[in-house]
Image 1 (cartoon, rainbow, N blue to C red):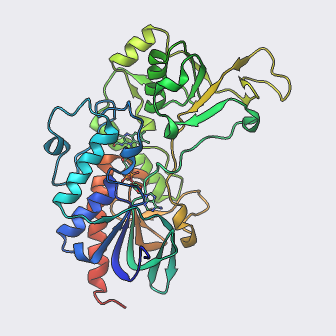
Image 2: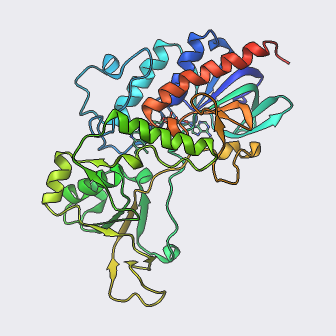
Image 3: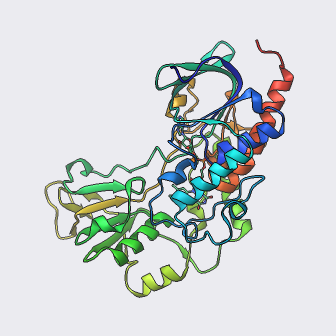
Length: 372
Ligand code: FAD
């Protein structure tokens, strides 16, 4: 049987934090039975179901409560040390049940295109659905980003991305270079250095990691979000909400520093067949060469928006011009909203954007209540 068919007023693509928040408010605003929710993952949990097994809820940055049912209300107050990859899916599953959010899974959306006044939402099996409004909440997990470094194609060792990390065990006895200046880079570097037997670790990134002894204030958070919001309103690539906040020093970082694990070097300029080097030319590795068995790229993610390509939303600034009260609305296509993009790319931002998206949809539908 074909997975999709017919016509709907609202389609929500993606059932992570952003999609569920939107679904919750669509129901609250009386639009639940005019909404279809789709997700290509095997079960509830959004990207959290794919995080590495050693990431606990306490080790995550903070998973904000979804509206109407808090995480500790769902899981109990003792869940801090639980793996995020099972705890969050458990939470989201309860959430979907409680609010009767019927997310169809697994349904991979291959393309969204225009068809008259509607949007044609096409699944991997070729079946499609017509929708009057689209809430896109497809996150970033499926678009791991690896920067281009000259020579990368000649490297014969192992390369992997945070996306594919599955714990420190695989790195025993190896020389591992971690690349990146964010929280994931630091966490994985410490974990590998401490737990993989006989491992040697190295650390590089393009920008120098900024450690801060002060914990991150709500004001700094708002400023970081405002900067990203300004960028997407101008049609620039969003940049990261968290990259500007620095790395708050915790006990694990303090002791890793004391043990010499966090020795950082600036970014290498070339990759060779056996490692990396600084200020070297092809074929002349020179003295500043480091042989490594593994390069672990903790270099972030981009928005998973490939399925929206037929709508040609990207402008010359490399991003999509966004508008609306919380910058959820695509300026060129006001019945398409992007959640988890730019300023809403955090669990708290996704929550807020979900409410705003439902409000915008309510507004659009009330202005043209009849199906055409
Ligand atoms: P996701 O949770 O990624 O959900 C998107 C959903 O869309 C997925 O279920 C996916 O299956 C589905 N999907 C994607 N493409 C398609 C398609 N074509 N068709 C159908 N379905 C599709 N933020 C925080 O606030 N706190 C943290 O602690 C935190 N930790 C993070 C750790 C890591 C390693 C990373 C990468 C990010 C972290 N973030 C954190 C950012 C975080 O991912 C977001 O805040 C939040 O989880 C994103 O929710 P989302 O709903 O936008 O996306």
